[in-house]
Image (cartoon, rainbow, N blue to C red; front, side, top):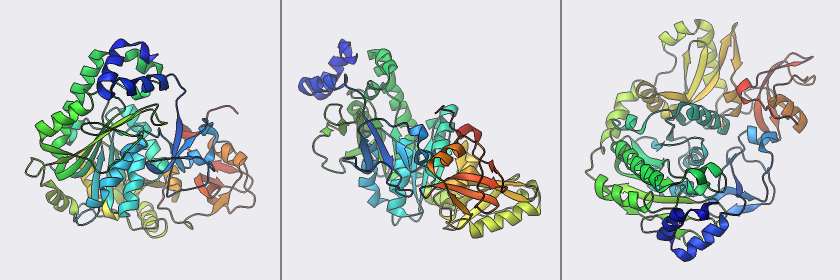
Length: 473
């Protein structure tokens, strides 16, 4: 186990002291913790009584790990399975949001730089929506394409249309001068906080890897720094404990990039305060561990004045269905359905676009920003995929069922029991003889799961093949 590595023990002693290190080493022999974070915009009483996570209103510690795959509420995006320690980053975001949600002249812009698989992204989306309503843009980025696809799927299930998923190297944002008000940088690290969950993390740990990670983290911070606005906030985090990747890099960033280290709150026990931030340690908290620090970009630092220019630059791109898109989409059918979507499907105003026969909706509050990002970055997903026009009909997309912006009366609904919900999620066929014919929204416990086309005697299951349950049960 980890405590057998003398170098790791020396690094841990140096970071937290020998007494605390002994507690951590003992805890690393215990089973990993299990926690979830509820979606406040799809909230259901899924787990009943459970122990709360101190720094997350919607976080819950579970006594044992359920079979999440067989829970329809998991597939509905009613909660996200996330280590309780990593929820601390969302806590720090909420502590500083009040300074950014009003008086900016634009929707608050946040970048989650290393976002896959989506835990911090979904936490940030919920926090931003609670703080500023629909007036925020969250860019969730993942450089590795395969992981970016997983991120996009998790964002779609969570259901917030103000999230744009991109796949860029951090250097790809360096030309976006002062565009983001807040950047979350949960940088790749040596993974000491993964020791209880992943034996490979233990085997791969080395002093050389720590040095390699620390250097890569500084490169990432340097690349992304121009994109942060003057007086903007960067929340730096790792799931590791050593000083080199944590306080050492925060000190380096403050001295070399032009920033002040700030402490948004007096957290207190059981969170360990370091010289530059906070460290959550196994044995002191029930999670797997996390480091988090907050940097404020100083005035006069390069990358401080791009917001207004970019806002003016993208304002003209906010139009909805362009004539070019109508032609590509198969003429009047696409335009007709697009107009109906904008009027009948969403609770708040959206801009509707089409690429070929696919119709997409983006909230009006961030439509200009989304258009700018589409033209500047590798965008994997943005807004909400509404559906595809086929044979004159609009076939609703699975993501439309899961978006929090969907009107309750946009489609007929069929409430089903758990067994039928699982059959739907396995893409099996079933019948809904009492439901309306046509496209029907399948719900369980009031939570939408997806669409079927009800033919009366049977249903055509529209759940995506890539999301279906493959587990035998």
